[in-house]
Length: 378
Image 1 (cartoon, rainbow, N blue to C red):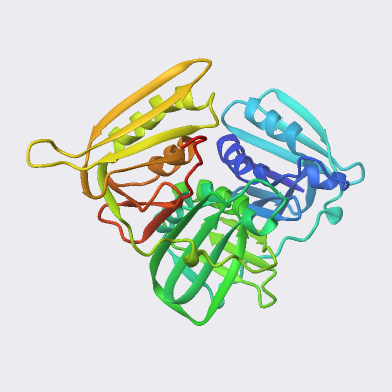
Image 2 (cartoon, rainbow, N blue to C red):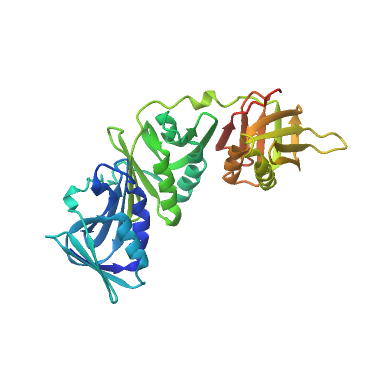
């Protein structure tokens, strides 16, 4: 293999694929990045056997070939090289990759590319297409609610259902639930239900940032893998086997109190409360006080810690229904307010022991449910 490419293009490609490199593995080659020529371009790939990312960058190919190089060594080296042309020449017999840039010459010891696992390639047949902006927004509004605890593997994934021209994504960790629905330009003939690892979608959201062309989504016939095809990038992920809980059963159908609040002000109040709540199991009390002919409605937000002190915030709000108090995990409130994407939100509640629903005003495609916290002695 003998190729030349620009340092900035190679560094960018490596930053995309290196996130899929296995941190620890019994297979040493999984700690490497694949480099190979592919129809006049340079192909970069990495996989941890759960997620595989492939990226193609422009290059001048003088001689075809492929190898794999240690991820950390190669990424750090390329990032340290000056901008300009990088020449790479592989000595096949020793699997040594000579990397030359300006007056800098480096020899990187690699592993034969034949030992690298095959990453499935996205085929355009029967693809579901979605705009990158819509996909990224959708992912960002659900993925944070997925569980990080591996004790229930199903909940570490995001449920996705393609039905006609509708795509629904839902994630839950037992304490909160996020559901987002979008309408696609093209539909599917048969409904498809899959559970995608949250980590794979988080990486996809990161990659989507600079995309302009639609993203193609393909599920393998066995429903064991899902493929996302972007411009010059493919992401392949294993799917989680199992049945996702019935999230509709968790969403309250009626609410006794409905509060309309300024998103930015509520977020600031929650962050202030968090200073004290983090020392007290993240508990924040939220009191809804309806207005009357003289006094406008308002919401009180407070947290207290025996060690550090207490906080009390007061916000104007439009409140219909009964006065009530409920406690939430303030970190969960901050998470959802950060991605609400609307100037105002509604908080719907029934009682101190029932879930609260948060929705952005003007967007009926996003619903977030938060379980209440128990306050001792109340």
